Length: 194
Ligand SMILES: [Zn+2]
Image (cartoon, rainbow, N blue to C red; front, side, top):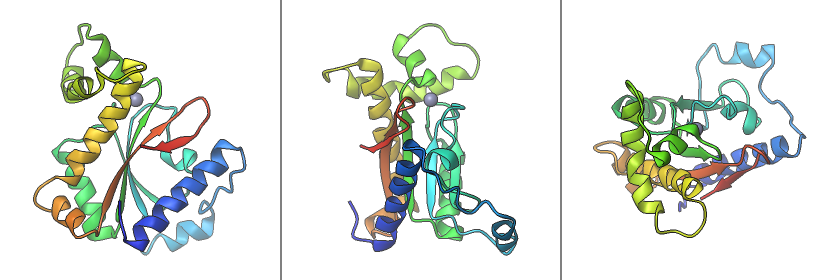
């Protein structure tokens, strides 16, 4: 995936934090008054998380991280639009983050609604339309269609970020950033890299 040691270390940090969380051995790092004071000078988050708004998946908690550690973008269905891409570009360009994790999760309501295909109202339609291409990728796979669509969606969104012109695609080509898709199991609390 990458030969950039900084990216490898960032991913390792997330994996270790999630292991602490899922085994109830959290260390709750970087949540002190001292950390707060230190961050007045500025932030240098080590990873960008593109996650779902679902209240069961707060990134700082499930990766056992603290203040100033993660730059988080959350919308239902962990999808990206131009505003989200701009936010990612900002974190990469100005804050020095080099790892981007797109985090899908089990029991995702946005993906479930898309797979079920019933009527949706208002702006939810935009979310459903954005998730729909993942069904095409997932529909011929063995296993549960919704779960496969959740994983396909995370992969597709990671691909969109990685190929985003003109900034992120170039940085990915130069191995200055890497985009990883992952799946969070809300029952076990474990994150699996896809
Ligand atoms: Zn969700």
